[in-house]
Image 1 (cartoon, rainbow, N blue to C red):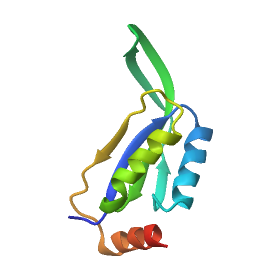
Image 2 (cartoon, one colour; image 1 turned 90 degrees about the vertical axis):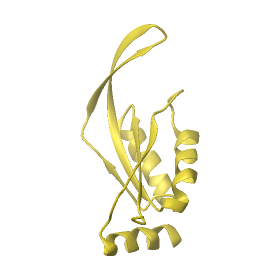
Image 3 (cartoon, rainbow, N blue to C red; image 1 turned 90 degrees about the horizontal axis):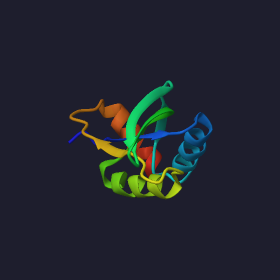
Image 4 (cartoon, rainbow, N blue to C red; image 1 turned 45 degrees about the vertical axis):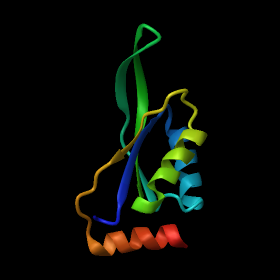
Length: 106
């Protein structure tokens, strides 16, 4: 195990991504968040093909806090059905994993 867990989600705006990321870091559920460049998502919703501009975000946390982080993202998210996915981390730099653990524990 790497000692680091990644959680991926998408937000409808950079402002929403920033607001939620700052709150989750302040609550010590995430050590950091990477707000990635704008993405276009294509999906069917209520029988209609949709195209939306979204902001993907990768949150870093510890494996023990992953489920709490995912639940909190769902509670704070403004989407009815947000994509919130835990991604496997096979290995992590030991110094980075230590930093993540320290940020969550503070």
